[in-house]
Length: 213
Length: 213
DNA sequence: TCCAAATTTGACCAGTTAGTCAAGAATTTT
DNA sequence: AAAATTCTTGACTAACTGGTCAAATTTGGA
Image (cartoon, rainbow over all chains, first blue to last red; front, side, top):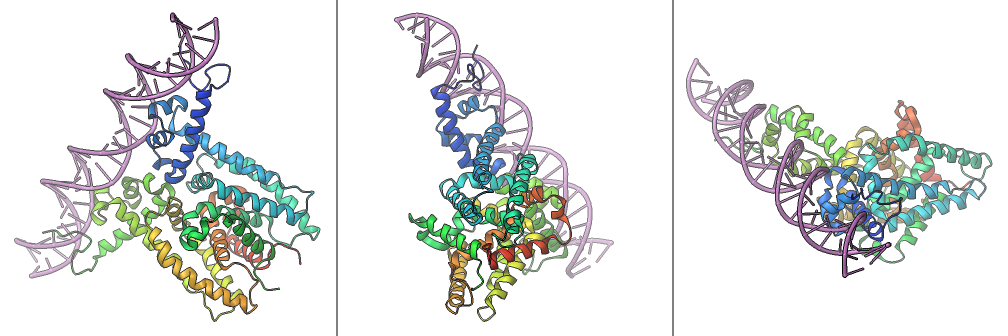
């Protein structure tokens, strides 16, 4: 008897499984991030993945499951560099590195950023739980680190929560509002060195502020 | 012969017209900002506006037209305070005022912010033209102003474009990621003085930076 | 090669959606 | 008050959507 594709044998995936699941995830990222959960159609995701809708539903049992997988994948990738902020490192260097990594992620995988943004803007029906438990705990932890740095005089006395929000906002903006950035900057936003230029400008503003010195 | 409601007589709107159009626009803002263009349904907008779908379609001929109206309204409100940045004012004061106003807009009308964000993230099918013409021109104008301020030594030498993006990103974040902010800050994010607290923190970071002085 | 399992698909179904239509109810004008 | 206009609605349609099913095709190991 043919088993569900989710677990064809002892948890191992065949070559075809691995390939097709990867194709589906990439297509899901593209379509969900562009059209939102309700706006996306399984047909479109299938077309983008180069297979029939029926076949796609052989690998993932429902639209919601495809979405859930795509979101989970995105969230994990999103958390890693934040978690990596080192309490024992130099504050400015740690934040510089985090901002640089996040800008790079926005540049290289803007669809993931938009998918997550879309989910949160919808009211986070799926990741709401995650936000108020795991993410909140992690943020609280980093906030303590930042407070220590401030107490040691190694960082200006800013509200750590809003500092984190400001970093998230700024770095995500270049993915989420990519079209707007390109409309305003023109073709320069597509040139090779652009992401370095962004990193330099953003770091300059967040590190030094805009008040003349 | 009954004429289209769009122009019942010489352009004047009856009391009922005015009332219902306002109801529809508010409902459209709510629903489109939560579910996106494709995810929103005319039925839901009508329900939210407290009338039948058929009646709603009497006032706006199609879903797209409802969306277009809501977007246009939002864009206009969004442009005003940016346009108001005064070349002859004090740079820090002008930017402080702009940031404060934008934060207030995010606080008071987060739906509008999310509607616009959603449109841009979708690839700006409707406002794309606006972004690369009118908005670009306005941004270029303000960039010149900021450059002058920098040349006069009244502002730190930052890239004006990215300064503007940073301000937009940060101020919009509190509307677009409202759920995330609340999940992390808890109930404190709902208290009366919260928006002032946000304004203070964001201004402190953007004006002074986070490097210790 | 042969066969069982895995993969793929077209036809189909039930529910939803944008928009139409004709007719009834409310409001304004005369 | 009567007539004309504006407003409102339920019933309907055609297109689309998520998901099922049985049958065909392909794959990989013995």
